[in-house]
Length: 394
Image (cartoon, rainbow, N blue to C red; front, side, top):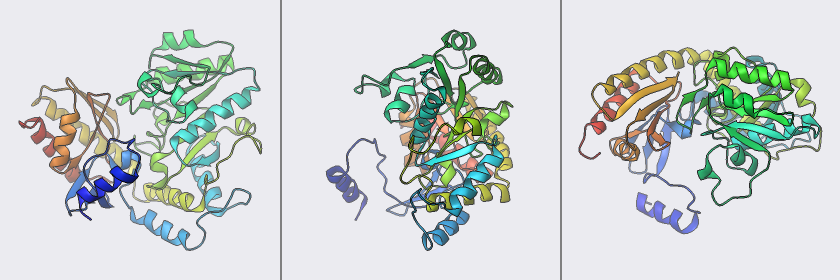
C-alpha cells in the first residue's frame, strides 16, 4: 500500500477523532522515524513525549522480546515479578511511595483523584487545579483540565473542581476551603505551553495542604522519567508531594501509567475500590524496568541537562534572526518557543523538510527530543527550523 491508500483506509474504518499528519510511519530508531516511502524524519517530539529515551531503544526492545516469550499478561489476582520490581525502582527514585499501575496518564490521574476522595472519607470532595492545565480525557481528568475547549460538548462535568491561574499564589490561597481534598498541578505545564511552576508556588501548595489536611498531587505524566534532567520535575524545587502520576516515557513506548502515593494514603485504596485489568501487565512493566536501567546506565539524566542547555542556547540564537520568536523557555529537554503569531504553518513546513516538532496553545512550538538526543541532531533540527522561519512558505 502507498501513503494515500493507507490514509483512505483510515478514512473508511478509523474514527476521525485525531488531526493526523499526512505521513505513514513504519519505523523508528532513536531520534529518527521513517515513513512508508523511505523518507527519514528527525523527531524532536517523539511519540508525543512517550519515546523519552528514543524510538525502539535496544534495551527496551530486548526486555520486551524476552518478556513476550514468557508471560504477556496476568491478571492482578496474582503477583508478578516485573510489577513488583518496577514499583520498587520507582519508589526508590521518588519519595518512597507505593504504586498503582494502569495504562495511561488519564487513568493515573483518575486513580489519584479517586484516592484523594477515598482518603478524605467523604469529608472533603473539592479539587483545585490550574487554568491551562491538561490532565487527560476521561471525565474526571478532563474536568480537572482547566481549558474550556476540552469541556465543550461534554457538560455537565464532574462536580467539585475549581480552577486558579497558574503560579498565582494569592488565587491559590483564596481557593482553599475546609472541603478541599487535594490540589492537582503540573510542575511544568506541557500542553499549556511549557510553563514551569516556581519553587515558591510549589512550596506554597505544600504548606497550604499541610495546614488544611488536603493532599498535594503532582501530574508528572509529561515531566517525569528524566526529561527535565531530574527523575521527576518536583525534585528541582526540593518539595515532596503526597501523590504523583506518571505515564508517557515510563514504558519506553508501551502503554503504562502509574499513580504513586505515600503509604499511609495508599492504604485507603483497599481491594474493591479501584482496579485496572491491564494495569501493571508484565510486558509494560518489563519495558519500564528497562527504561530506568537505560537512563542510569547511559547517564541520560546528565544528557538531558547538557543537551537541554545546548538546545535552548541554539534556539535562543534564532530569536536574533527571526522576530516571530518572542522568547524561549523550558527546563532540560522540555522546551517551548513562544511565537508572536500562530505556529501551525511552521510545524507543517518543518515536516516537509524532515523535522517533526509540535505546536500547542496556537503560538508555542514544543521542542521535546528524546533524552538520547545528540548535539548533531539538535544542530540539524535548529537548522531546518531556521530555514523554515526564513522561508516564503511560512
